[in-house]
Length: 122
Image (cartoon, rainbow, N blue to C red; front, side):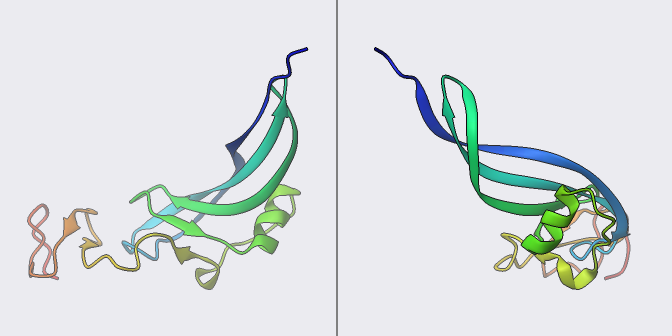
């Protein structure tokens, strides 16, 4: 008898959209919330999930933020939730020395005093 099973990672868009000012680039934009999880499947049917983590992605500069599990679970249940600035933690950007222009989003190096794309003084 042959059994086909495996462990994989999945991602689900939770259908949550909120407008706010991006912590990374300073633009007024919206964020979408996603859940990333690991699951076990048997004969290509997912049986159970574990290791759920919740993330928000800004639509302006595509920065990924981690959000607390309690807030992510509330969004997953369909509860009315509002993300605050302190709920968003920038992922993978802590060591970055570059930033984005607040007007046009152009990636800037620290030595720039003006944005080369839109001319804004920094």
